[in-house]
Amino acid sequence: MDWVKIIHILCVMGWMTSIFAVPRALIYWKRAAAEGAPGQIGELTFRLYRFSSGLGVIAALTGLWLAWSVWSFAPWTHLKITLVLLLALHYVWTGRMLARARRGEFRESDRFLRIFNEVSVIGVIAILWVVVVKPF
Image 1: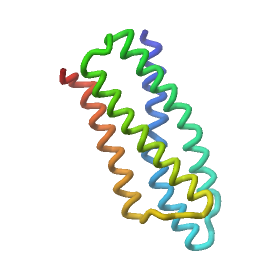
Image 2: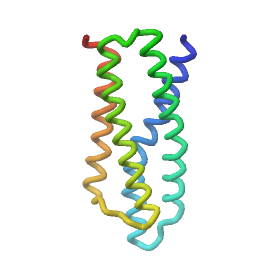
Image 3: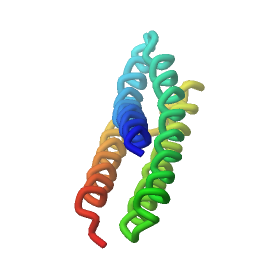
Image 4: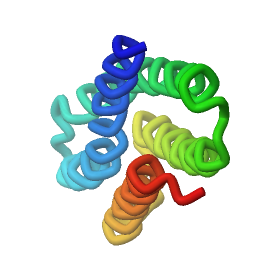
């Protein structure tokens, strides 16, 4: 079962990279587009998002496997799964903003994107707290 934990942790780390980096990259992409020189940042941001989405799926599947086989869906795992689902919704929302950005539509302000980015950090801290403390 240790190998499943290792795969889970590695995929979570990769998924977190995108969760934290893509909203910030959207800010830089928006600024570059406003200056008329978007360069490669848009394509790199999209590739990071697309690659990390696969890691997120693997992280979720291995997490469910661990919740079932190791922890027998203990009560705290339900809270963790709920928080991960909320983080996944955040990720999907990020993907929608990214799809609009690829069409040249930047609706969100820099301030919104910064706050949006920090929400994911709070979500990850909450998930880590649940995993470490196992409150119930």
